Image 1: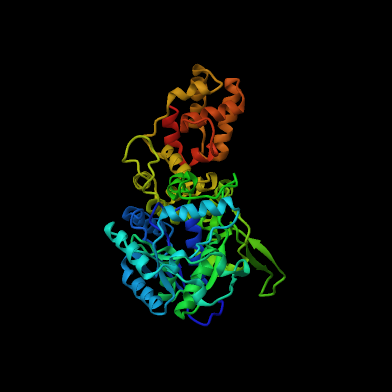
Image 2: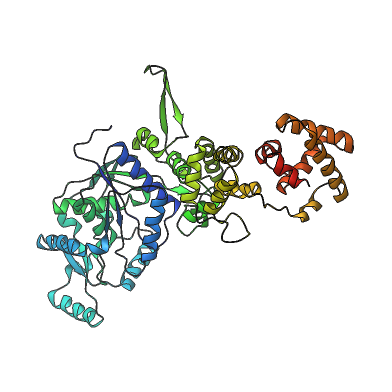
Length: 505
């Protein structure tokens, strides 16, 4: 366990202005792993100060998605319920003379930004409202009051008295900023909304957050928030700005992208643990020691884990790469395949029933939910055989969705679609002939196992004057309705002689 002077407290603070996206899950995961590694607390805080864009449906969706991933929170807060806290700290800054009223509207700011662009200079607020006379302030205040608004409140950077702001980022190393280059920023808008930089760091301080782990797009916000903490005489937490997720096209993934949407991966049938495993190793390196009986002979990079707990024990925020992290769904599918193989059949059944109730694997109707499919098969097969089916399929497919689709073929009332015959190289009468011979050979077999089925296929090929491949395809088609898939011999053994004979009749 890493040693820190105080109990570790981290937070994940999404804005409910849209659904949780895959990059947000990664940020939540890194915070969660850090908390687990250091026996700390993981706090979920909903940053809903933007009253116009924040929606309860998005908040509920975020909470639901985190629960789907089994990312467990220790505490929960909403910024909308902490307005009095922000007012209190704003009053402290007023008493210290570190803030002032600003009467500039959006049009004024936009003109100043356009002027800066034309001058090829960065936009910095010029502090014009700081030098207004009492009469001018009162005149502007009256005009705003007529519109039901109040002056914005800005921090007076120069009055804080810092020539530079420096912090040691746990990912990027030492970073330094000149406060004069970002100017006096707004703490509270004319619409009575506390801004992100103010509300967020007040919460972080008030809730005793020790480590702020967030995306690297927040690096420009950090010096502003440190300035506020300095102005209030508060201690400075540790910061870690992790790389953002980018698609293969080089564009940053956002909540507006389909492939960033969590539902996309739920519906595709990726295991929640596998998604977390992939996100943990994307832009991050896990190392494991090699050797026996405690003798370390070296280290190798580890990619596949058995649980989130195992990820946490090996997690080291310092190993997070500062360069962009590229999201690759093919790699995710590879990780998911490994998780399917490594998950015991009984455990996988529980995961499918609990986590994938939203999937409707069969087109027959709404009753074909994963839970009903599993319940139905448990009625048809003995427990040992049912788990054998799951064990077989998890070795053959890469997603839960694919497994659910294949499970349908094991029902006694399974019907094949004869329209698929036209996709086979054989004519209908040839298929029927091979089917008849195959059925007769299997019926006469003394035993029903992989060897006897293979022998029956060879005998059928010889008698029917067709290739062994033709006979394999014929058996597959009449047992599964498909022309390709996992071992048809193993499927036939699991189905048993009675069901195979019935489907060949």
